[in-house]
Length: 312
Image (cartoon, rainbow, N blue to C red):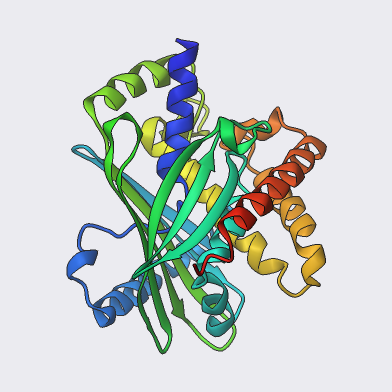
């Protein structure tokens, strides 16, 4: 049972890994103008949620399960000009610095091939692990559209663990005004009968206390009951990645040699506000997180050097 829990826990992280970018079901037929209009309409319809929510940030999320698909959307506002946001987020290499803030990402590398970029994530447990002890997930990066006031990036993987397939991740950014950018991060995948069976066992036993951010109701004392299961898992990871993007952007104004240490410190502090959902931080003290992230960053630099600049 413990082994099932460990395997499933690792997988659920992997399916949200870059939580950050799902191409929704209709995205294949959307052109850039449709995508921009849809995102602007989403912003107008949800202004109240962005202003008043439980996060303490202009942030809200939605998720659903439909058949064998699990999907999450995260929306938020960055207090940075659109140009500064897209200049950073359109660079494949920067996603490695973002993703590796997450407790389960042990390293990330990037490489350019003819017509595409590959990003490899080394996925492991919450404690320190060298890259050779991790699982690897490879995504194809594509800048779908960049135009005045709008950016659309996708990441795709045909197959994943536990016979999952059709992993689609997406990032959209929309200019609101001279100082603010509306950001949409999402993820979806198709699961398997094996995973469904493992999930059912896991969330009834070892994972029964793990919840997401969507309120499903209230208990007899009027306290919120949060969604659990696969939806809760993918919500947790989506929020972890949103905080990683935010921490990355917040440290760009500092000298480059100081940014990494500031990012890992800020990510831990922000994520640590949500102990009910991001429960593992109760067991992972900040000093330990900073120590193992520093070691993993050194491993990441070594791996990238072995690949080259990413342009070969």
